[in-house]
Image (cartoon, rainbow over all chains, first blue to last red; front, top):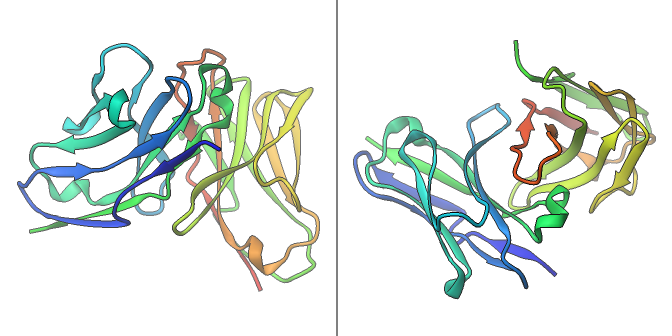
Length: 115
Length: 113
């Protein structure tokens, strides 16, 4: 079965420090991959997505992620954390391009930013 | 105005009661989805609809039913609510291209006592 794992249910970083949120997936074929952000009391908002174009994907708010097929990873990074980045982050995978409607979400990582 | 709206935003109900959660969208999208979110489990797909005549079960459809009243409206019903259906419920929409983005509503927090 397809799955998505996010290492660390909670990550804390200092303001200005590097943000690294880890995501690994299992998929037998190259998938579509996504990162979503959820701010308190809000729905999910797409940060970025990989759809088999460039392996380094740039998203909104200074985030980027790199698709590494050999490692089945899609880690999310941001060079310098800002207080406004505090939120829940979800990695998600569409198992195949034809099953886009059955996107599988990871359990989420809660990011705290310390002043 | 928000592209995807959900009503109610919060609801407390009792075991055995029937409850309906409503979703409306102004994106003009054909595809609509219902998810539930539980702590540590991420989002899980309950039902999805390609259009008003095409409704499909998701990963966890047992205990739920849906109605697609129009392109813009997609309702989720719990016929007889039980406490383990306490969760945060999200509606989402997207276009028909495989690379289209999903747009999520703000969520409905449901508590079943």
